[in-house]
Length: 196
Length: 438
Image (cartoon, rainbow over all chains, first blue to last red):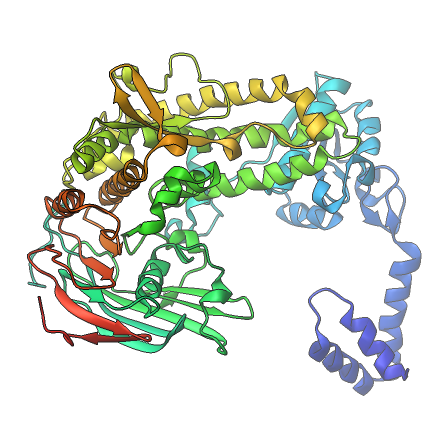
């Protein structure tokens, strides 16, 4: 297989990229100065070589423990449990949370053959034996995310029933129009309404 | 039809007459391209078997639930050798709410629904907009067939009238299939439990809605059955797979404050709000009560699951829950004797029950819509004797004003809405007035 075909095939394996886009990306790179292309290749290589799951929280990082776990300005008594490392980025962007994280690496789904052993659950149980006082469950509001939350809640209750367990609220997106929200979201927002 | 008549605010009038005006079909079943303009009162469509009568009604009702009422897959609805079908209707009259509805499906699997020319993101936001009910000869299968058919009936109807039902049911099914998978092989109890709470919460919501509807319509159902058959009343009641919560009973004994409104039995749409709400005591109060009742069903469901834990592990499947619900239909055969119509009813009794069920469905829809639904009648009089036909006609006419689209193999004396226009249908072609008007 030619080098060009090779690269196109590799691009085509990425999520959201079809044959056409793969071809476009390939020919785009062919027009760039070789130095720029090598820089890209180098970045890809470094990700492969240097990024690992943090042995403490499961976050993807080139340091171990990761930056969040090492940051002593963060509150170690609160742990926020997320499905994927990419969820951390979304939460961090809000700038609203200064506790620690725990990345499960997925969610329970018997239909996909994913059980507790396939997730970073044992690591979580281990961490909770330390100084954690609150666990915030930030799994997605999907059926699988809910079940994973239930599972974790029962597990943590067994480990230490003093640990406070909370779940992220659901409801209307900020900046969104009530008029355009779907019925389910509005219903959730109503049942989760707060006193002012 | 006076289009300029001022719409009454607040109360929906029984005279409101939303109806289908123009309908166009493209590559739907045996229709290559068909267009017709329905009269506001309706039409009787006469044609031989295989001409496309049921297909036409199926196309119209597709705009109500965006699926086939005959349980055909979407791709079976595409005309042979074609890729895409499209159904489009203009809705006219008062209290219609919208001006046009359209649905299209591509064999590739893409389905599109448009309300007033704009594509909707979620079909569940658009279902029930048309406001229609189908009476079909196959309805008798709801009564005598498997419990699955009766659950399907409830699911479709409640999806149309009960806010949040579709979502609760969908999520219930997802929890259920994940939980069943977790039960397979050497199951980890904690892994099964993870799915239990969601299953119970969504399942209780489904059970509460089903129970509330059946309980609220049981009297009307009995009355309709009596009127159609001239015999003693039939009974309809919820038949859950878990024990009844304390204080809730299957029958009428439950009457008291908070008892659902039984209006609608007289066929009027005037008391629409209370019918839709299933509770004559007012919306805000009943919401509280609904939640409380759902909680009681949840408690029973949870208990049933734990009592059946052993059986579940053995059979590797969730053995209780609304996926095992049923509706019980009974007829009184003697003062102290009742007969289960599902198994032991005569053909006539079962057909009567099916008609009564569709009539209470129409009342429920009227309550939700604030107007009478459109009646799609597929050869319903074929297997009824003369007396029953006459009484059904009377029930469909008295106090009901919804457009009637009736299909029959041969012209008979069908006196509805003061005499329907008569059309013929043959080989997927609809010909208005071909036979002259009735």
